[in-house]
Image (cartoon, rainbow, N blue to C red; front, side, top):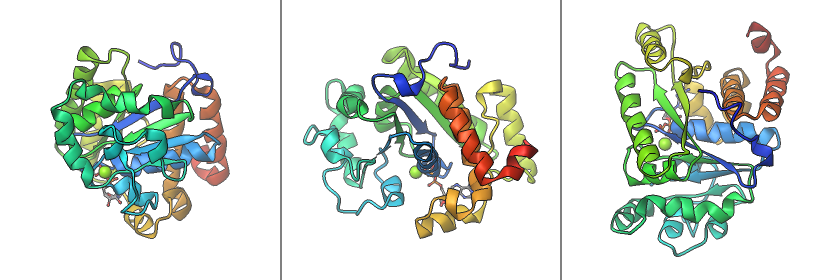
Length: 283
Ligand SMILES: Nc1ncnc2c1ncn2[C@@H]1O[C@H](COP(=O)(O)OP(=O)(O)O)[C@@H](O)[C@H]1O
Ligand SMILES: [Mg+2]
């Protein structure tokens, strides 16, 4: 189901729309997707808050937050800092290993699934979009991220068991919806880190499409070693390899389209035409 007819465009909402990117395991390109989608949305002028909810802190690293930055999301979840005071550089709510412990602390609290949602309420008013990166598991942190979100986006690597992983992630999305957060919308699945020259990648895509139809984003994010290189150098793939980065421009355009915001989606389309005219005309 596309949200175009029911959703209010992001730009005129009283608070930011929130997208949570999750998957059942690590290495599915979640953090890269969050980072690069944030880059795309910022380039069309949106004010975006990136929230790192993974104790590994990869997203925080990507955005050059020092490892000893304080306070972090862990302090926010523990009720020891306000989210607005933990935002680094006006753009990222960082995490570090301390977050692993706060997951345990959270587990024993009343309203444990609602903690992030409540904590972000004030900060959300100051942004157009919030994008949350999840840990590589479907535990309490991911549940918090889903409950705090308007939309869930599942990232799946193009491997033999990807369908199974997506089913598991989707179960948690459905559970959050049924038990706590009925308005949560499942935005779709992106096939990530895919080499469609390989039979198993093509099979993974076909299986996902058979099972989930239009929920599978048309954009497939291609696999390339240049992602690891760009991460190492701290340069967005949009700049490091614009030809590859165009995958994320297309994905960003699709995401905003599914949020019902055709105006911002068309801004991404214009950016894509600038960056890579050949790709656009090739469709
Ligand atoms: N499209 C891609 N092609 C190749 N490697 C990628 C791609 N996207 C991400 N990577 C690399 O794969 C690894 C896992 O990606 P990451 O985004 O950290 O996944 P996750 O957050 O799901 O664990 C990282 O080393 C990253 O640089
Ligand atoms: Mg990650």
